[in-house]
Length: 179
Length: 201
Image (cartoon, rainbow over all chains, first blue to last red; front, side, top):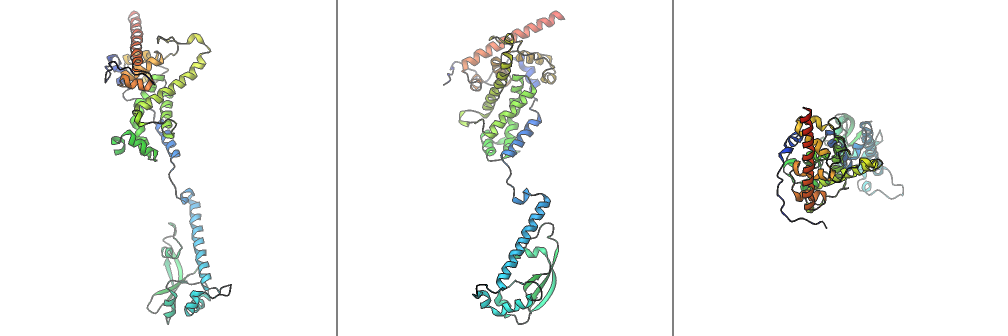
């Protein structure tokens, strides 16, 4: 261990005035700005900002990624509907369709003339409806978010052509997209 | 910015280690000036001084130089790191100079032939408009490195003997003797130059 001299040591130095001009001349001398810049770059490398996965993509790649996600969502939706409407391959009856055969038949009848309908209301409600009518309309793409098709900043303002199965009281019971 | 003005070094270090860039910037801005001025006077080259400052902070950032707040102030730690980096630079230079032994300096601090700190070699000379300041800087640059440390830290950085002892890893008595001899060597050299000026005038 280092020995420490316990003899008198001034708390603060008593300066030699000889150094005053040098002290004054050095007062505003600082490290060049490039040093701070290099250090902050090193800091950024040391602590990289956590980026969301889509930020790693280029703008073009980001659009493609969002498109891919939307396609996957639509495919998943279509598969779900197919599972709902298609006969069971193993011969066992679908519990939901068995419980509401009329609603299933109703939707299947409409499905036959192009595209699958997405039920917006429970099958019991569709089953109870005595007179359905089909209405063609333009929906804002943002309204499809709840159906698993998220809009992107690029297409959020677009409209999507759709057909709605509407109850007598005007309530939309099912929906299908037209291309 | 509040972070830069009120937080202690320890708080800033803690924030820096958790990834706060503004804390690191505040630490740097707080300490870079004195550290750079010390390195500049100590090694006599603006480029080398900038390298030393950058390496010291880089070591703080990466953990290469571990600062323990229980063992002293961050500023003293940084000065110690800077001094060690400069010594390492000088050791590299000494290996080169060993090929020419007649150029090595003596223990008394008058190693005038070791370096030639003329005004053109050091950009600091351009900063120092005052002739006396420039003379003192040149005389300081000609002191032996261990005397230079003590004189710079005491006279220009307001440090006490104990603080200098901590930075230079020597005891207080050694600091006192180095300071005394350094001042004496400085005074001799300045007096000699002034005599020369008087004669030539």
